[in-house]
Length: 160
Image (tube, rainbow, N blue to C red; front, side, top):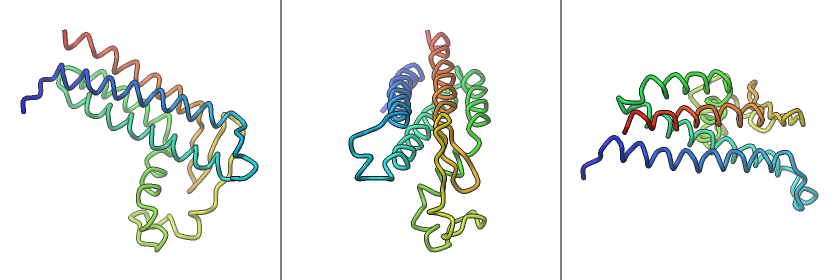
């Protein structure tokens, strides 16, 4: 199967667009009151987890775009800015993705122990999840995601 850079870029741009919509959706949910909140007190925690998944998907897609020679500089710079704005993202992703290992104290990051996995705080300021000594602010995540997506969109001119 032959993959051309313009086709790869267009597919990645569409996936990135969907990821940004998912990020915005999760941010709206985190700023809302939902019917299940009384019965499921961890709803916002799980909405943060879904936000985390959407952020990681966008980051992976951006890396795919940045691997194309036509977009390396533009999107690579935007990825660096995205990661700098969300410094806790990688740690939270790693632990969430390998929660089974961390629950048995077998995770790679030895600073994360099974005792702290279930300890987090949630603040309404954006809102923000504080977990594992890191934090993820939903509003900052949305702004960072939109900036990364804008860089991906700007890369389109490199493929015409």
